[in-house]
Length: 59
Length: 141
Image: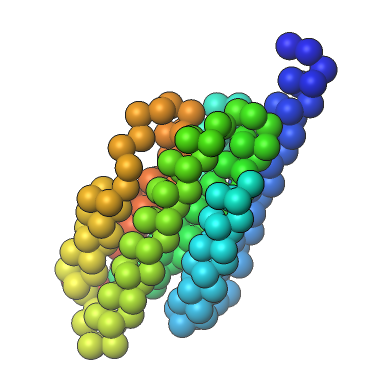
C-alpha cells in the first residue's frame, strides 16, 4: 500500500466513523422528542436525502 | 474497512432495539431508516470520490436509496394514519412494517456486488428491525 492509497483509506475510515457518531447522536436526540416531533424530523430527513441522492448522482 | 462497516450495522441494530409503544416504535424505526440512508449516501459519496466505487456501483446504490426513501415515506404516512384512526396494538402496525420491507424488495435492484451490498447493510438492518421493534414494544396488543 502506497501513501496515496493509505490517505484514501483513512479518508473513508473517518467518513464511516463520522456516520457512526451521527447515528449515535440521532438515537440520543430522539430520546427527548415527542412522536410527532420525530415524524417531522424524519419527514425533513427524507426530503434532504432526496436532494443528497441527486447530488450523489451528479458527482 | 469491513470492521468499520460492521460497527455501523451494530449501531443500526441498536437503534431499533430501544422503543416504547408500537406507534412510537414504528415512527422511531422509520426515522432510524432515514438516518441510515443519510449516512449510507455520505459513505457512498466518499467511496466514489476515492475511486472505490465506479459509476455503475454509485448508480445502483443511489437507486436503492431512492426506493428505500420512497417506501419509508409511504410507511410513515400509513403508520400515522393508523394511529390517527385510533388503533394502538402491535397487530395494527406489524403488517405496515412488513409492507415496507416488501415495498423495497419488490422495487429495489438486485445487488450482487459485495462492495455495494456492504454499504447497504446498515439500511437493511434498520429496515428489517422495525418489525422486531414493534413486536417488542410495550403497551399494545
